[in-house]
Image 1: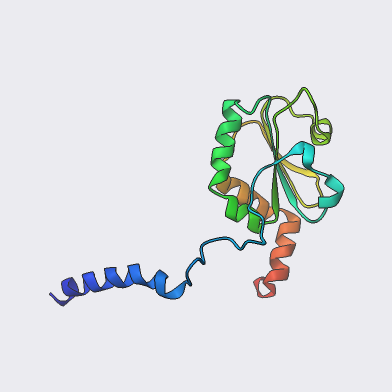
Image 2: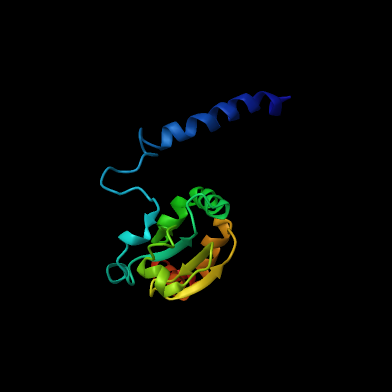
Length: 156
């Protein structure tokens, strides 16, 4: 009988804890931090991002291509995790005006390319890939593993 009486109290406590622990507006991004968003390939300069950002590139023949739309939907849910891994999400949907990345990687139709911070292709996928799988693959990359050990040396 006592366990039944505690349930409403525990439910109310669970709802109140986030308001007590987090200050007002803590879930909002700071004004000086840019929001994570896809960047068109034409605006990317590889030399400026080498060993700084980890590119995830989504190629398509059109921004309306179903595989491209699906891939962008799958990635949207993981923007926070991608940003934490220094990812820059690059899109290229104009094969008529090839970007430098399109000339270098030569995709055919839809293509998802994961690269490490040294800007060498690690994984290529011809179909949309779940965001969770992309994050897991990034965590397995050599440079990402080294970064994780530098952040947490006790993890050796």
